[in-house]
Image (cartoon, rainbow, N blue to C red; front, side, top):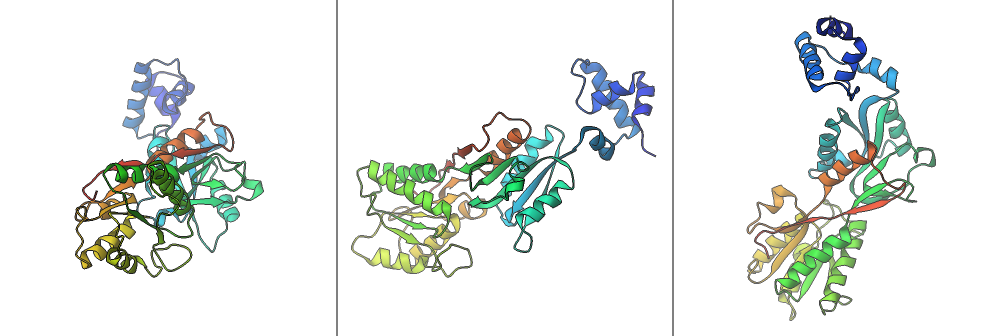
Length: 334
């Protein structure tokens, strides 16, 4: 048998209502001494909150549900969940996720999440994309994370891809690099936005932004890690030509890893001959390359924390799209 609110109230000499307020965040006028004493008695008696009963009283469980569009399969996008969970815990909420896959559509997964009566629901994607929510669920999902709703009807948090590409390109230019090639991620929204920032930074520096070389990292129209790579052939051709680059910007850290290997095969030194920079800051790759890779860290954890604030009552305009900045991580490749 577990202890009840009545057991705690009797031991503390207070009402059940006072005990409930102390343990469940109510009664702001209660003294801290009383609150602490009740919590100590509850711990001594082994009290465990009856979440089912609490949910019946308030209409929701102390949960934040996440519809995860392949998110939990990504080694670095899980930072979104970590940021969300850390912020939720300060409000005594737990986070759970249900994965969206090819066999289950958005509507069925949202309905499954709703069965748990969470306080709020978020939609999070593994990579920056546009998501068309079914009309009936626009008011159900409180925030989109790492993606935006197709018709901008839900508050969305996305990485500032264009700003990040502008920043890292400007960093390369400030380091004295003038002939910069971008090996980009074809078919992805992130790649499209980063190319715009790349060209803009070159133009602002008086270089030929419109004519800058942007090459696809893979043979397929849409980038994936499993697509046949074009990186080795690109690097071999670039370094043997009359206008070899003095910097290569990579669409992500995996592409940068391939660029490192290809440059070594043609006896080119990093950063003496060619600087290399990238996006993502996937630690297992970026910090272990030789030399360690300068890259732009995605704002995944910050998106998770901000999403929790929004879901728990943050003041935002419905449909607002917030662009969160990347962080430049300087290492030795530039």
